[in-house]
Amino acid sequence: MIPQLSPADFANWRNNAGEGAPALPVVLDVREPWELQTASVKEDGFRLVHIPMREIPTRLAELQQTEAGTGQPIACLCHHGMRSLQVANFLMQSGFTEVVNLQGGIDAWSQQVDPSVPTY
Image (tube, rainbow, N blue to C red; front, side):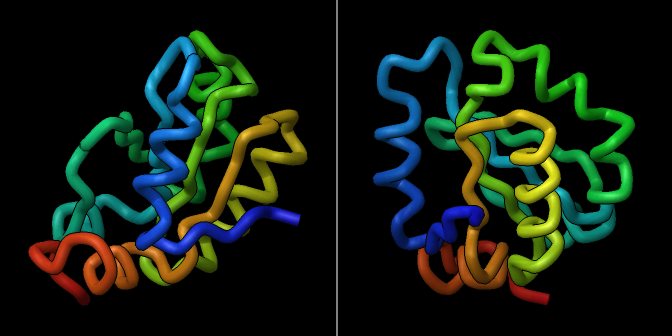
């Protein structure tokens, strides 16, 4: 089962996930490019990677080739948390070990973390 992480708890997860890791934790935004242009999180102690959900299988190597490899802490993000949950499951099945889903997606992020992020 994929751990569900509320955006309000993200900072704590980010700080713990990054502790002693060779690279910053990753927020993997799996939304479509137009969605990213509409609303996006700002990098803050994490690296933002955008790979639309449909491209994840063909671009998996990009995530595996980090310093931490499949142990890279990854928080998956989409609009409301459903696409990101599917991607998180796929990543776990592909050997990644430190994967969480940002529950409620960027919509919840806007409400709980950064109200300057537009909702749509």
